[in-house]
Image 1 (cartoon, rainbow, N blue to C red):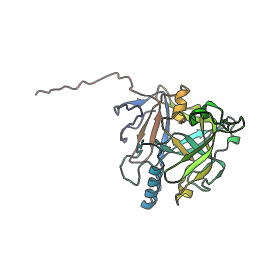
Image 2 (cartoon, rainbow, N blue to C red):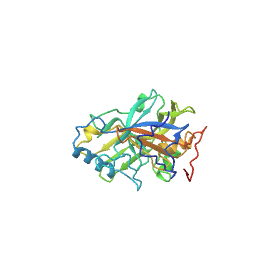
Image 3 (cartoon, rainbow, N blue to C red):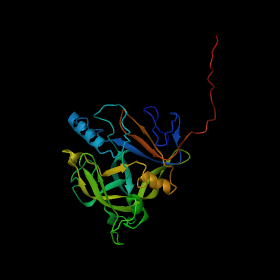
Image 4 (cartoon, rainbow, N blue to C red):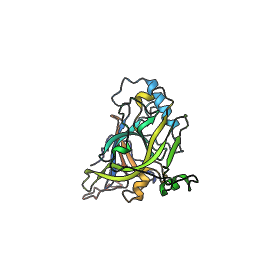
Length: 279
């Protein structure tokens, strides 16, 4: 599958690679992203402004990579992606955030999760044949917390809590399950591929936005550099290289997020450019 380069502003890489627009994704994981307010032209400017202010407040690091293309303060970064989780796979729509690390999903029985959302779904570990808890003594938990937890016992789950600058938060426990994504083959076609990923099962959410009950998504996917991020886990498993790129359509909204290496296709014919021309 080739990227639609015509309407894209550019490609951005964690590895600080500068690429020409003629390069394509090859042999790695991609998934489409959507503008959150696409198709909601009647949304008031105040609603968009409130959402964007909230989005900027949720960044956890100095990395602030705007995902929009038109530069309007009311429309920057309002993008989400669809991923499949569990067996059988169920689709979830998560906010794309390059300023945080972990992937977390609203879970069944969650306290504070929106009762009604645009896309609403809750993840239930019990309904997945491949779900398993992550114990506080497992390597993932020890690395995430920077050392062993003194009160850890074999039956205790590895918990998480993410606090954001605006007072909102997400907390719960880590689970491990299949995540289904699209992988690009040699002929630029995509096919589903499965990777085991540890992510947060959110059972307590605090959101201070007035519109949180109607505009919330199913969770959040972070693209930070920590070992707990999905991209780091996939890279550690040998699925992809630890880098990502995005190609976004600032006209219609949406685009593609690519995880892994971007390579230049082989050229069969080139046209030299002359430095001087004489008539």
